[in-house]
Image (tube, rainbow, N blue to C red; front, side, top):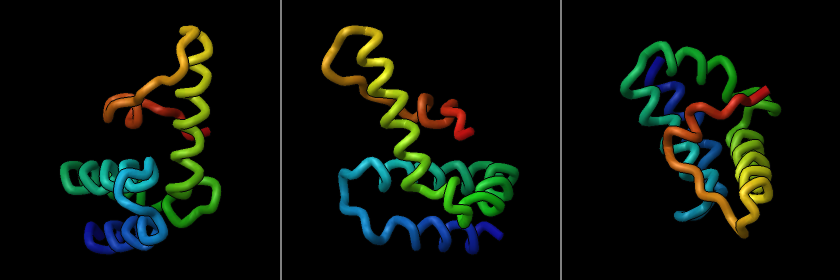
Length: 90
């Protein structure tokens, strides 16, 4: 199971270059899978759905960061790993 879900995540990582948010999200997903078998099961169920893809997940985080920056009246807002994990996808 673990190898399968990591392979699915890596497939979605392919078009992205180092430093892009999508790669960061994918790497975080891989870490979650490696450290938590239950997380791997949930990610495996959803990662192939278009609305739950790495690109969609990252877009939701970007939207939340932009909203937070606007609310705080600053130009940008940076999310760390904990913010990514807490982000609701629906």
